[in-house]
Image 1 (tube, rainbow, N blue to C red):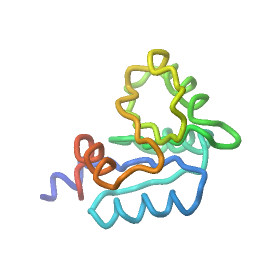
Image 2 (cartoon, rainbow, N blue to C red):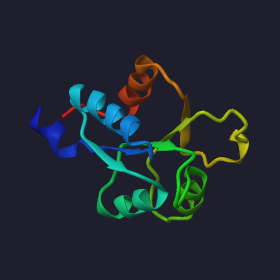
Image 3 (cartoon, rainbow, N blue to C red):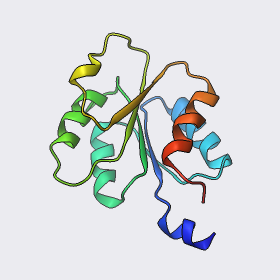
Length: 126
C-alpha cells in the first residue's frame, strides 16, 4: 500500500462556486482521494506547475479565466496532459472542438455516483 501513496497523484478541482468546490472536495477526501483546489482557470494553470494530477474536474463558467480558456492554454503545453472531466450546466458545448484529453462531462447538478464513476477510473485512494 505504501507504494500507491508514493505514486498517487491528486485530483485538481477547479470550481468558482465555493460551496460546490468544498462539497466535491469533502466527498472525495472522505473516499480517500488527495484533492487540490483552484477557483478559476488561472489558478488551475498555476497549480499545474506545482504538481501532476491524475484528473482535473473543471468548471466551464468561471471569472478571470473560464474552463474553455484554460483548455486552450493547457492544450498548447508540450508535456503530457491530465484527463479532464468538465463540470457544466451548459449543453451547447461543441464537443468535437475540445482537446482529446477531455474525457467526460458531468452535467450540473450531477449525482455523486457519476462523479465517483469518473474518479475511480483515473484516481487511486491514498
